[in-house]
Length: 206
Image (cartoon, rainbow, N blue to C red; front, side):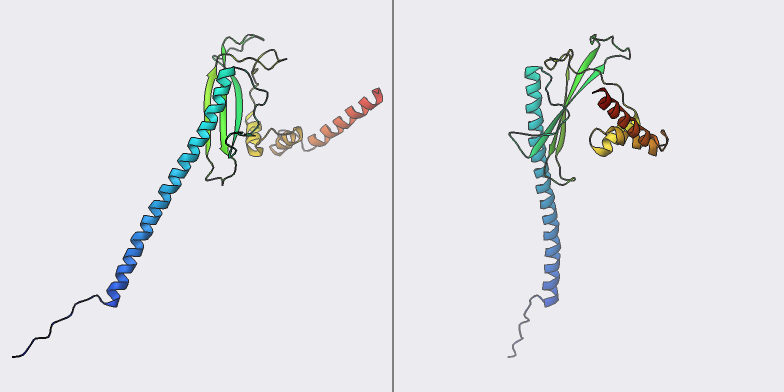
């Protein structure tokens, strides 16, 4: 009686390689999703820490209702040194009528606390802004009023301020006006000569 040979089944080398390739693609996709999730959670945690810094400094301002001595300068936070905070105060008029000197009944003060992550890449930096409004603030000792109304700055000055990241010097402002054609090319030299003449006059007076 003849016995029929049993046929052995299994995976060929090509099938194994194809399976490994598919598995590698799936794992790569999972790792990408996992990394994005981790990055998103990390950014959210940093943002919550930045918001905590902003809320803490705003609460100090709310508690004291006192205009601080340092405004507009980034300061390293003493509790969470990874962040810097900056306070900006601005008095805003309720209507278009300019109040008379000393009369600020139709104005309010906008306080903005800006918090930035000090040491991070530009795309990874956590930045938050917290805004509150005050009817009044106690002025700095020796000042008649807290947060005087600042004159509206021209657009070219605001653009230069944003470009430099600080207040421009007189020379930088004049140079900007020269480049835009609003002042003659020799305006900067004339200003320099005027400053020298003023210094010489002061020496003669002494």
